[in-house]
Image 1 (cartoon, rainbow, N blue to C red):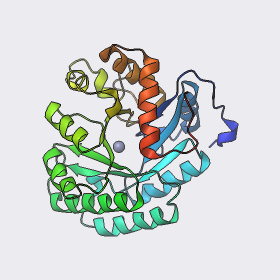
Image 2: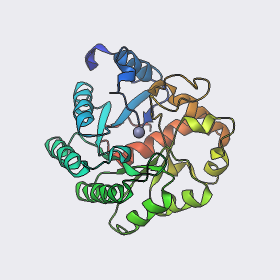
Image 3: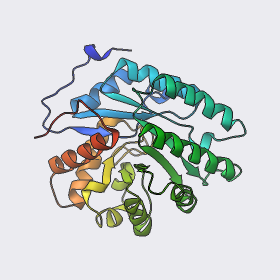
Length: 278
Ligand SMILES: [Zn+2]
């Protein structure tokens, strides 16, 4: 793989974006990972936040981040769909990696509860979310939440951490107005990705009832590509497509979307050497 210094990073790009959720280490990028990262840089997607899935991928995320410091930021947790009978073992292995690379890791995620695929391990998923929330509070890092048919269960767990300065993102937000309102009241942000651009999406109607301060952009690549790339692989260089749909919904320009959502991400993840817009 090419190293960062071999890639051109255009600091004079008029717009700077953050992709707050990309699984760049997956096999889907095996053949062209460097090129995909370069394409993201070329369109101004300067910050890439990469969550692992399990103990195995925790190492892949770290390796990638070490090759691209200040551009690729790891986040660590056990993904809810990877919570099985060995979850405590997995969590302890991930915790070890977290301790070894505490300064490099910018977020705890993705964690959460997924009841779409399987309800067998609900109790274990709740406990896993609790453990990750404790990590986030202790390490003062944002918590990245994956929610699928489980907002009620997640709010129940997070409620027990009230007033402990727990912050984060509901990644790939897909709820209704009431759910969005609860997320905002808890001080969490909503991660908006490709589904915003889908023809039948009800997301635009929900999103426009909130201020831009409550949103960050994400691809969740290689999954959930925005229009016109549906059915193909998603990648971070498609972030401007999502930004442009946001601009349309908020009746503003894409520069304003870039500026506010990138600032939201930089502040939440506490990125020190951030590009200064002013
Ligand atoms: Zn994800």
